[in-house]
Image 1 (tube, one colour):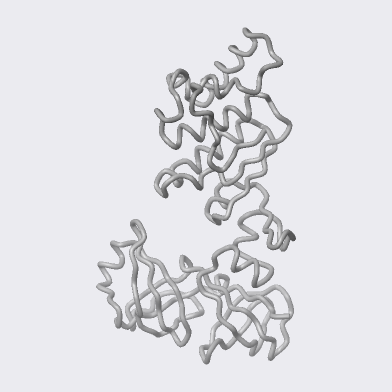
Image 2 (cartoon, rainbow, N blue to C red; image 1 turned 45 degrees about the vertical axis):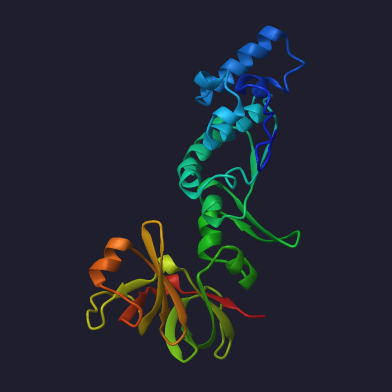
Length: 280
């Protein structure tokens, strides 16, 4: 079963007719029963006689999925199934689509360029670049531990900076990145002088007003706010901490801290959130 990126519904057919399109081998009654069952399962029964132009983008997505699963295929392929929607609708439908895929019990391959979508939908994640698999595994493992710089870039890691290993004790690694000393984590043995890519996600950066340290995090980096931008209910911050660092706050936290470009800031990062990739 295949769901196109733009759904490719027949505009002159109703929701029920679109769903039944691939069931020509069944009798009329068996076809009607199968369509009714599928539309009911996907919450589309009341829309059965409407045409695609008369329903929302999210409803069209469900119709395209209904047309794909009604034939009870052995495998589903979804080509960027949410990319045609606006951001609020896409975020709302991620969980709904995941539930639908789980309920079908049909193995499914979802193609997407959106890392949050992949994290929300996948049981197993495969990163591909140039037609080659560069990493695969459980989504949280791949997201938290990209195996290469190419993987980190595909996953949208916000801060990637060059560093050099100073010392290592167990999995804790002391590195220097553009003159700034930090502690990161790497299970691989890294000799002194090893060049690494230091990867930090914006959501793993805590911010505090200078002079108010009260936690056990190993990395406290002094710096200042360079620029800010609002994205939905969040504020993304560009920081200068000796190197370019990105962070994200809720709008409420941003306003309570009264931050502006030029404001002094302290970036707090726990060692496990500083991911190191040896450069080879």
